Length: 217
Image (cartoon, rainbow, N blue to C red; front, side):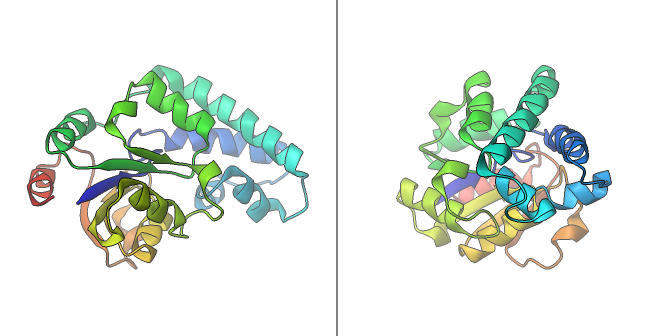
């Protein structure tokens, strides 16, 4: 058995800071969107988000890269004083490592944001693989990111449990043939109603049911 973690909203509770960054950036670019409208688009790569909202070809690749980088700089500066793992996750990672459960990260975040988290919180040693935006062609709900993480771990997809905070991430896990644990940091439980691959809903990693998950793994 192996564990694959999404990062933003799953390991760190930072999605409202991403929402703030996107809300400001998109409306500066003329999107004229509410926060809830922006929230609905917050999945996948940054460039994909921009294309969903403005259409393909509206910005050059260079413009999209610049806007995406600026948004991440706004997010990182705002979130840095609050950068910490979600409650209970440090102990959970320690227990999983002690049980020799292989772990990976499968995220739509780019290396700039992944390293921001893993470096500042000294987490690299827990994860045998990190698959991010630069490593895949298609973002969630495409299963590519999780399938690549499983391959890197050398574990069959059906033996992987995905930790996710977003419905599109849970859908990606289902598309990969994986079960999921849903963390309700950004989305409410009813937003996951259409998915039947969810083992548990948790608010954070202090949930005692995770002890049984560790034993079964």
